[in-house]
Image 1 (tube, rainbow, N blue to C red):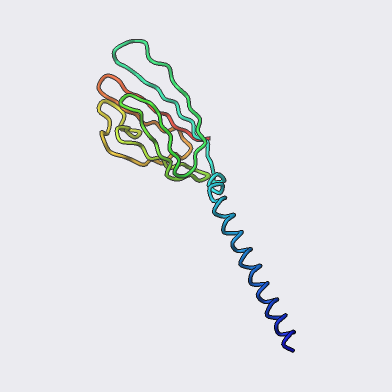
Image 2: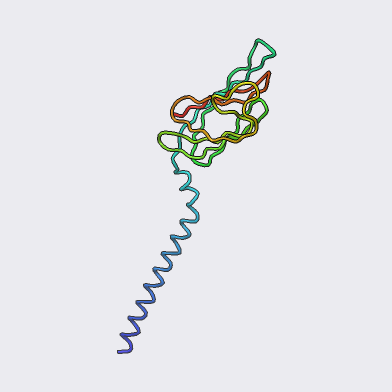
Length: 148
C-alpha cells in the first residue's frame, strides 16, 4: 500500500515539475521574442516631400522625397532650415497617422514668415496631403506629408 501511495506522489511531483518547466520555457520564449512582437505592429507607409526655399535667388533647391514605413512611437529625422527636426509618430491606424511636429515646425495654415515658433504640436494625417513648414523672413522648408 505504501508503495502505491509513493508511486502516486511521485507521479504528482513529476507532473508538477513538467508544468513548471513548461511555464519556465514559455516565460523565456516570451522574454526573447517580445521585441519581435513589436516588429509585427501595424506599419503604414508615409511619404514626405521636403522643399527648401530661399528669397535670395531665383533658383530654388531641388525637392527631396522620402518614404518611411512607420508605426506607433517611431521617429524620423528630416533636414530643413533651422533643423534637423525629429518627427514622432504617436499612433497609426488604418485611416490615419498622428504625427508630433517638433518645435520650430509650423502646422498647415500657419506657414509664412515667422511660423509658430517653439510650440510642439500634434497633427492628424487623414489621407489628404498635409503641409507643415519652418520659415523665417527670407528662407524656409515645406514638408508635404501623405500616407499610402
